[in-house]
Length: 256
Image 1: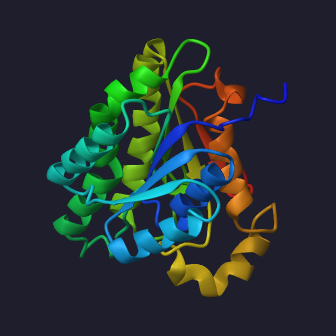
Image 2: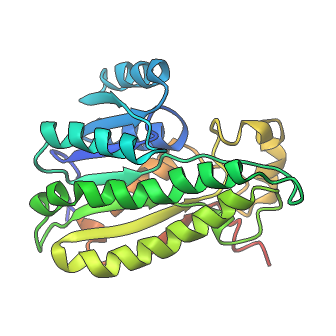
């Protein structure tokens, strides 16, 4: 019973791990004995986060640009050279774009879809050998895809490619889970609501107002996202397959 939520001794990869939700998940893993690789495009922030987390446990930074297939392949090659077995892959790297529908550019569509959807599929594909090697019937390896409540309800913003991409992530999570669970790889997702991050910095001035609009009367914080990720990567969630956990303080339930 005491080991149901243990992730100690596992190896994890967290994309977009230098800040925001990715850094929170990485911190949760590191603090709980997981050898954690974090990756992001901007090297300075990435190395700073890795240095901070390395005071708590084992955290390794690898720079990458997952918005291109060349970047996905380069990062996968680097990881596979270092780790023949990977217990956990957190697909968190993402981008957003906002513009009125009459002005929404093709570049804003392609950039978001390439990073938020395409990179998840192809990075997972490239790391399947290491994930298969780590998993077994009693303890499958894990993939957790980070979606968003914007992929479930109307975002009330003009982030068309972002909301579409996150809806795609939720469906991709179902599809991949059904195909890969028999191979001892268990896949689920998390759809966060409002968490303070670079992606939500434009709304941080309204954080108190946002919090008061939620049934939980609070915005998301470290323990919420880290705890959910640890649950989905531990023995406790072995029978949860293909689902996306809505982690939003009641935002979707309150949407009417």
